[in-house]
Length: 352
Image (cartoon, rainbow, N blue to C red; front, side):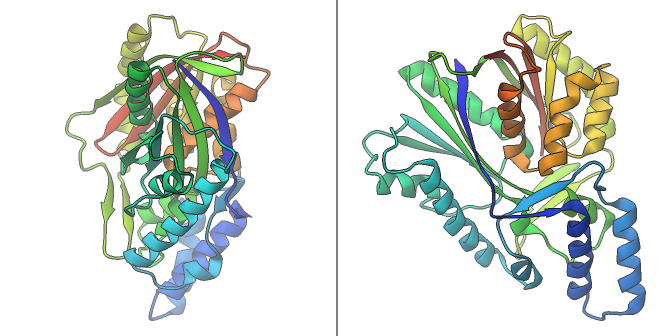
């Protein structure tokens, strides 16, 4: 089975990280009702101290305007904005002349409406007798892995093409009335990401990844360390400071099991690491004794886009397929982490 035909849509708005942190401070000041000067000064100082700096993230993209962020919104408003935007995204990914896939898997953790944008495009294109829709929702940053697992099952049973589409509008759920350091860190990392790709049973000659294995497991006694919870106002991320430590303890043995399941040596593999933050990439690099070259694309995507939740790893894979410095036949280890605390991994082989 092969992953191929990666296609990215860029969200309509972008800003340098330095400007983003200035906007974040402004939003927190607006949200603080008393407006005391002590808070105004304190929030700027804390953002400068705890948030991800521009040497690690240069730009982030968003699908909504700054003015929208300044207004108090509830879950209903956020969901309607998500739905309208996602429908337009699907129309661009699937113009009228498109050949329908046998199955379409819609991946997101940032917006839910029924019928979904994936179902709407099937109906609009009159593909209802050709294409099944599967929803892979609310699984956080690691969601590409269960989506690929689902696709592998369908593609192998039917010998058909399965498309996977990620629509992550993380910026919709920024809540500047939450002032904790944990929330400030998350608000300085997350951005929006939109990407489509296909899993096919046979390679057509185009650049692709051969899928060797996909594997996930939960770290015991960690269910309170990472959360993505529905609140009245929207979706709230919880990220414990212990997450890098917990992942660090488990990652070496996890990759050994991944290597065993793949049946190939990963000593010279390149790594596609979901950047929950710069520290995650750095920590995994040290634990696995990886070189700068093996981590280069993961760091590049974090720098250019920020953390786009489940859309991030597919952006890394897309970049690796185009990167002439990564030769054909190279093995690529994908790693991501999600609520649970769940570790997910895959071994791919680049075929240029």
